[in-house]
Amino acid sequence: MKILRIHRRLIAIPTAVLMLFMVLPYGAAQAAMISTEQATHVPAASRTGPEARAYVMGILTRADVQAEMRALGVDPEEAIARVDAMSDAEVRDVAGKIDSSPAGAAHGLILGIVGAVVFVFLVLVLTDILCLTSVFNFTKCSVKGKSK
Image (cartoon, rainbow, N blue to C red; front, side, top):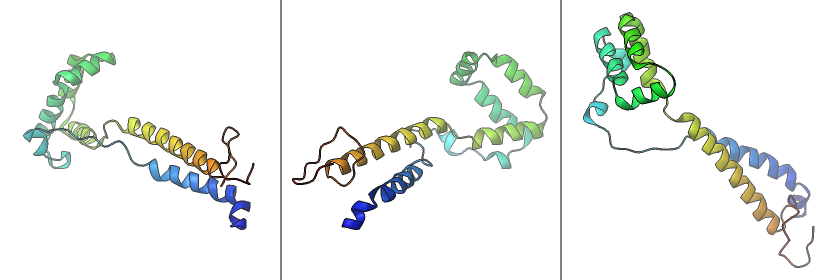
């Protein structure tokens, strides 16, 4: 036990870093009802040119997508005209990128980092209260006979 007390910071810092890296790769999970069209959609790699064009146009004509495009300063009609001017290979490439891009990935990363920092903080406070570490000055050791 005396060896653990001597090397507690040597153990605590790598453990905190490892806990942080275990949380980072996971985004926030989301669940929602999906339509039959979404459940049966064909992957972009197996779509022909006209199918890929119809898929991209279907996405561009959705009201929520057009509202977001306007919010970003892009004219939806101009975007549709540009897709019309693309070759079949380019449209298949765009459809593949739409299919493979994660939605809300940055948001999940931020939540993961904040969650990990809060978790490490709480673990360090708890270990300070139990007199296993001495990281924070605002905690008091609750075990009699031990002081910081």
